Image 1 (cartoon, rainbow, N blue to C red):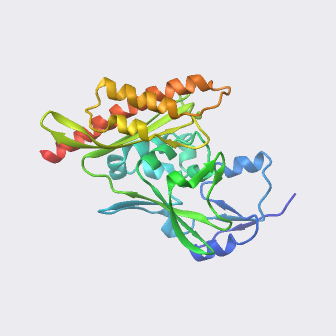
Image 2 (image 1 turned 135 degrees about the vertical axis):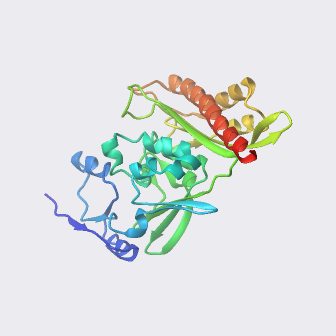
Image 3 (image 1 turned 90 degrees about the vertical axis):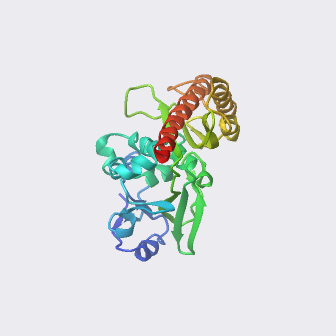
Length: 296
């Protein structure tokens, strides 16, 4: 059996140095990595555990941005009242990752880096304009989450790089989001399809309408897809039936699913339209409530 060094760096500088070992692997939550190792993945020569780096364990909510460190677990996010109020759709996606026990270890950044097309937290990240803060031997850089994944299990990280944190623009008082998925079982299953919708509203004499929108679908292509046509169908409307049907149809048209034991490609195309419509309505209702509250 191959030998493995287990490293526990106390700083980002140490982590970067230890990742310089060819074939080194990162451990944040380990809920994906340990299963992969048991399934035959080659044992890394150096396993670098990020859990002891203090700055990676923080959720920071500022006046203009929200920053979530690489070591923050799912349960820390779902238990965070202010974050849940500001970004309920993102929190919903995180809360669907595995079981309660898994969420005590698993991290949203790990969910992103694992690269599953069905990852529940990723569509809402993209819909909220999240950015990856990346560090490595060549320094630091930033990359939108929407550009991070290149295919199933594949991402844009260079050798020795890792994601330090996710940064989101702080949502406005007239903005909210939602994430919905469909699974064959009642819980703890991979999404057959998912949809995240992030909306900004504005008041008019006839009531609130959509001023800006972003629609992202998951589980229906090699990576999560931003559907601009679906967003455009919602903008300028109060989410009447015609707007919702057009947004759903745009998601169906954009989807490039496969058929497998959990659902056919045709079924996924149909389901993603339904999820888009429903998520848009939930996001609209939430944003309208925020808009109403800000005007009281």
